Length: 231
Image (cartoon, rainbow, N blue to C red; front, side, top):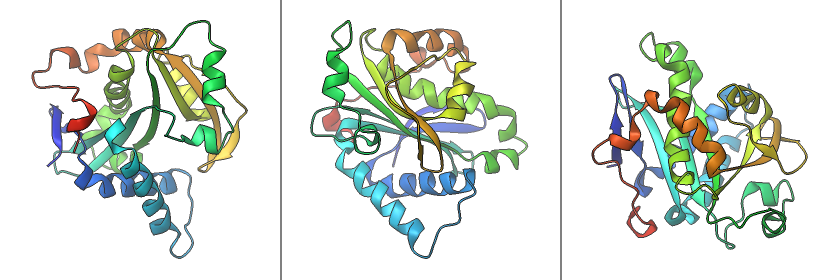
């Protein structure tokens, strides 16, 4: 069973265990297809799911996977945050050509930890069709970001890397998240996407502003297990 992080009145947040990772990967692919109105070719969807599942399994011991579930147990949102080491190749390296060590050497400070944010998927169609969930449309995005940012914001000098959909980037700017581009935008996973970075200090302002959505620091049982305890 997944690890319960927080139970809200109409949904709950879970840390996904490895045995349920395939469902997580399937959700991400299907939501992306729906979001960008993409019609998969025969066998393409399962191929994409298997590719993402294989990638996530390989990095499972270095990552935290979160899923928001409805009161009926249906997935409605996901996010993943991965602690980087030089053996892990993120999409911003393989698809955007970013040299992470070179990027880090150009900073004016020495980062403590490098984290990568990904697999953010929200089933807006399911939320819109549910009169209960639709009340929480904006809060759901904030809750998922809080779950991930809480790992990154353990130190002001931690770094967050991500490949961010440009439309999403404009939306989160309105929430006070002002990330910095580190490369050119390309068409990636159906949308114009830019590689970006932010710092623990920069993201901490978001946590302070929207902590009322989820008082995560006072939740009994909310833990940050070491990488050896994630399975």
